Length: 571
Ligand SMILES: [Zn+2]
Image (cartoon, rainbow, N blue to C red; front, side, top):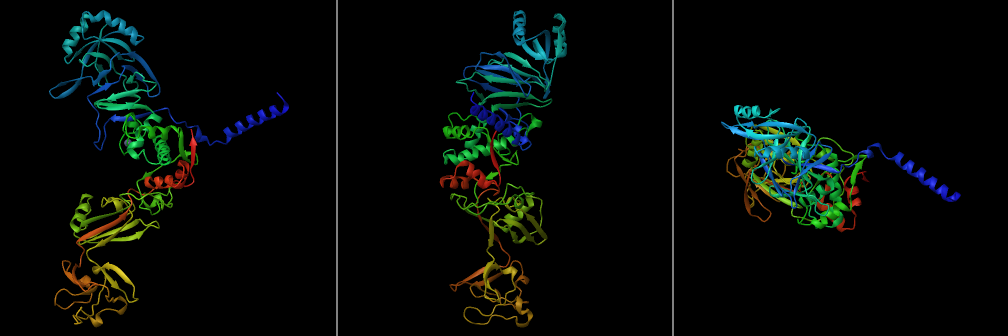
């Protein structure tokens, strides 16, 4: 080695050492190879429930495996495409009880137990290999009756009885038991498909998944069924559920990085149930195997070309929240929607967002519908008199809102101002059928509720004076109407000049600009919400990402646009 080459080599070594040193410590958290997604589980929202039995299929055959949450061991090739996995129970008087089995022998492996099984099958056709008490044995019979089980036990030397609420059975299509497994919640039964071109594909009832399937039996519960998938392959199955894979690939790639970041940050979110993420929008919507689905190639490309990349802030995976669209207004600061300010979730420009069906929208509700919406949330303010936006955010979203009723007021803020009405976003204005144009003393035209203002009417269209309150109002509260002239509906004297003092069921006649006369209620009977965008408005706008991608941004630029001050790290 020449001196120069040596120096270069030395520099390279120093550089590598230095590079390792400057990496933030959290970089050591690796992206796991596997992820667990619940398929059947106890969901308190009722969108899923554990099952008594499930049907598993794989082209080319299924292997039995055992996992301990970290490692998987394949113990047997069943040489069957279809298997049924079920709880090991019988029903008596409507109550479920664990079956009783007679256990003989203790073997070091599935294979030796299978050899021993041959000696029993001649006499006991229902004998099968089981994994109980942390080892392999031969199990005979499934009894719902202790006496009968004991009778058989007495005939077999060294036999014991076994019954467990955490046992699962693997059966063939005819119902014959091939394997019994009780890992007592420290080891779990797995079914692993024969690989096809290096890919594992397995069908659970009617849906295909990449990877394998794990079964967890929690005492007193049905079976929890889990898809154990390679994390990158899981992401294939997320893309098409959350974004159109045929969009500009840079937008789809940005989304792949976001979905990966979400998965890594939320590992073990459903740890109490034995898996990482659920397949619903509680976590990320997951549609199972990507193979043969809409936009498969694009989804795979987006995930593969960003493999291992996640978004970090100060070295930790971010909460990469996203939503559909803002209608072109800026995104929102996190604290204006949720509780806390998050440094990387700041309001940013979204003017390049592509127009979509929710860019602008209208919802109209009657006052009774609003009353019922509040009632559903156990809020009772009586009949609705008005809904007032008290404050908007800088970006244009409702920050604080008040509902005024005959029996009280209700004030809410941030995201609640959207969720209360079930409308698309927090960016809206409210108009009502009681709105009129009035001109204040400074000549400024205002659109407002009649109810809100003290209105002094001067003349009707024909010039006839209808009434005048003259002295009763201080001049600075007096409005005259120009565009929509307001005058009293009945011939009765107008009490104080304050229309708010009219009966709540009254209407007043309004002279419109074109001279026509319209009856306007004093209290609004309908509320119209004119809004923009769809979703919470924090983080990345999906239609915005599409707009940026179509304007030449790459996925990294898109991500850095929507998440302030973040890095994209490959782990
Ligand atoms: Zn979830």
